Image (tube, rainbow, N blue to C red; front, side, top):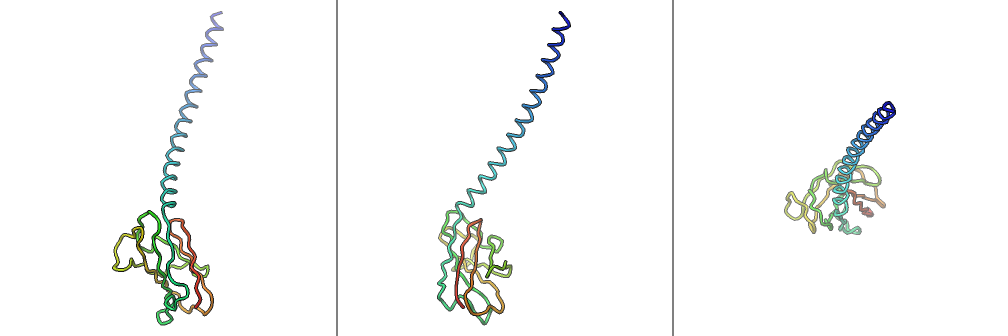
Length: 151
């Protein structure tokens, strides 16, 4: 009889140790998942609060300057997120081609904070732009805007 009780006690202790190990692993995994979801939530919140609009006049002859070979567009921060008026803040595509040669200037007097309601001037260097219809795609924190104009 004592051997049955000892066997049951050993099995009970072993099952408790296994259960405690599994619970420890699950607790750690749940903690890591919770942290990842919190970080993802902050990123999504920033993306949701970011909204920009291209406010340039597509019919204006000021969009493309053949002398400097620059496309100049104005973009307004219509969201609630403060942005930095720097090239690293946005991605640009001209006619589907990724562009790296551009400058961003906060209007009217420069600065280092692109607050809601503020406008930036973006000058994109595009040598030899042909006449016809063109597209500029601007991506800022996941917000995408497309500007179409005719040269």
